[in-house]
Image (cartoon, rainbow, N blue to C red):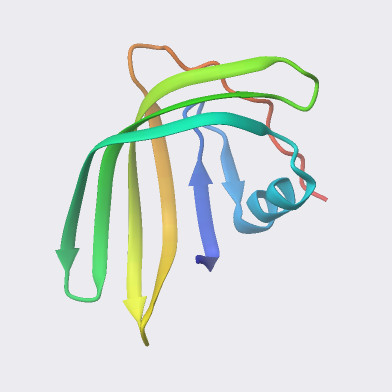
Length: 107
């Protein structure tokens, strides 16, 4: 679950709000063909957790242009009332390999 103030920072440095992420998922503006996570490291701190790892994604933009990349990511989660909420997610391209999809425009 994403928190109401969730912020997503793409590998290219574009910051996307929760509403933009949800709209992109609803409208399927990006097709993800494969997504792999490795080297997952979860560090618990009371009711919070920091999750770090390495990921590789391949897909297609709405315009049919391919994108791909390998990146390192960090996310922060909060566990409360039996539910885990994603607060923020940020990725950094590893060795400049990321070809990002275009940013989702806010409505």
